[in-house]
Image 1 (cartoon, rainbow, N blue to C red):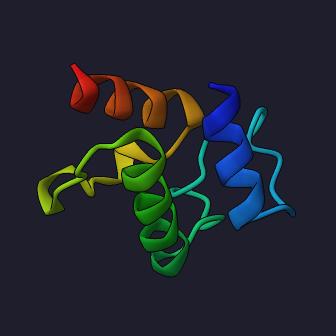
Image 2 (cartoon, rainbow, N blue to C red):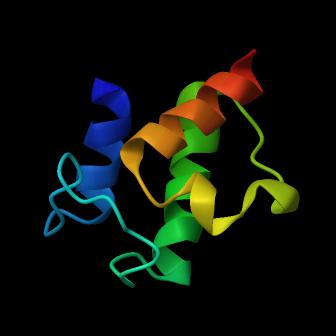
Image 3 (spheres, rainbow, N blue to C red):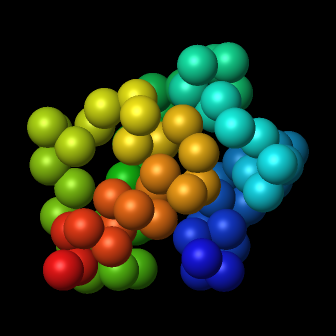
Amino acid sequence: MDEILEILNEVRPDVDFENEKLLIDDNILDSFDIITIVSEFNEAFDIDIDVEDLEPENFNTVAAMKELIDRLQG
């Protein structure tokens, strides 16, 4: 979880990722942010986030992002 937060804070240091629960729904993250995050996650966690994984619910919270990463690593 710490590595996920570190990546997210590098991409968007202005966002409180630990407390924000609607990153996509509240338009806090835009499509450019998601592309950057996906690229960073793919590299850091040695995964391949596919187009079908680019659903808003996979990026709305840090917990959802962690679940996505765990699923792809498993």
